[in-house]
Length: 175
Image 1 (cartoon, rainbow, N blue to C red):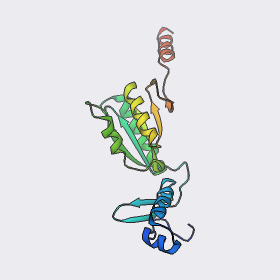
Image 2: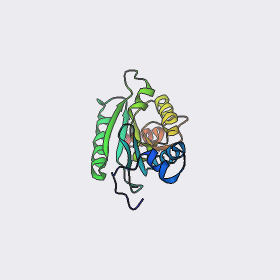
Image 3: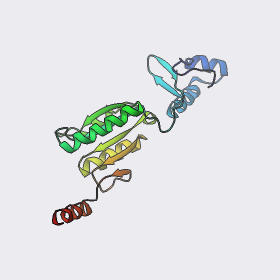
């Protein structure tokens, strides 16, 4: 892959098959495997494009799934997430889980490849977190769940333990 440049078009499947004297189906499977590894990007109607590997800590896209933007807590979190995404050069995308939106629709709206970014679940209900975790982890997405401890969620979690947080708040008021 060293002789190819990032963003350069790769040979069409039929040309690769002819050069290597193998079936086009075998070439297609191999190219799909390379795309799954992040070395190629397959674009129907456009062709196959070289995509050089990026550093593991380099996010290209971050999808934030939130129930509501009007919450002060959510707004402050989004400010921090946006600032960090900007620092690392990642595009920030938003999906809503409010007003009864179907979770499969939310999942379909996440269109970038799993190796191109990650998903932040922010302030959703436990049932929404569990369902999105099941659906998105099956597709290979890395996720971080913020602020909702959910049964059935086995991914990364960041939040405050409610009982100890309340105890500390009450202790502060009493003192």
